[in-house]
Image (cartoon, rainbow, N blue to C red; front, top):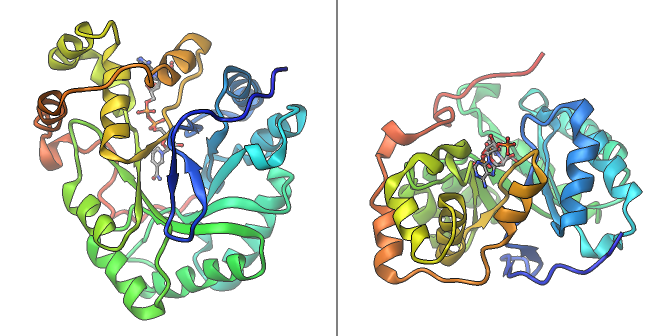
Length: 286
Ligand SMILES: NC(=O)c1ccc[n+]([C@@H]2O[C@H](COP(=O)([O-])OP(=O)(O)OC[C@H]3O[C@@H](n4cnc5c(N)ncnc54)[C@H](OP(=O)(O)O)[C@@H]3O)[C@@H](O)[C@H]2O)c1
């Protein structure tokens, strides 16, 4: 297997580390498919993989990493704490298990997956403090949060003085989530945009097809390029090699400011949200 290093853009986090701006998402990739999918993504050129304890596929991600010849320092691996393990001791045990399952002695980025403000007495601050221990002991290079609303972000920063490296939130043309993006930028927190192509729904959007027609690009490629030009980190998921390649081929064209604005104007606000609202999300896996 060719082991070329990532040659695409990187973003610098507030702790000085860098992250490839485009990666590969693994939500809903089953145990039986994960090794093949991640191996294919690595072969095609992805070097940043986004997984989570709740995806139940970290072990397969680890197997694909181990089977590749890619030097560890050329890979960027993210995982996230399960909603089940917010209590500090549980979080510590769950983090140990993540490293074991991934077969790594250090992860590049570890996130609180959801703030769960209505559970655990609303105390996501203790959970955040626990994640910062993993940076202290060298087993996480960076730590951050996911699905944190502006008030959640402000609260952990004010109460701990530690600023997350990223906030991974739902962002796509139909739900631009500007309040959460703005709050992140105010604190120098990098935004990671999940469901960046709206789970494939961008393909049916005429405006995106029209813009793509100017460059010979698909709606998915135009959308991913829009994210990149806005500075967000993305990791589209696909099980198909041709789409994995397509989603990587976005660095040979650029959008005009008018096109960026036209894509942003597809925003439908809350009506465009595909996932749960973090203010009320309270699901815990069995
Ligand atoms: N932090 C969080 O709470 C959270 C929540 C959701 C997601 N995420 C992360 O973000 C990643 C991406 O989000 P996502 O998986 O929800 O959605 P997504 O990447 O926006 O879209 C994935 C869907 O689009 C299809 N697709 C992929 N490339 C395509 C292309 N070029 N043209 C047309 N369709 C295409 C895929 O189908 P095929 O597989 O058939 O190609 C799949 O159904 C996840 O995998 C996960 O790592 C995080």
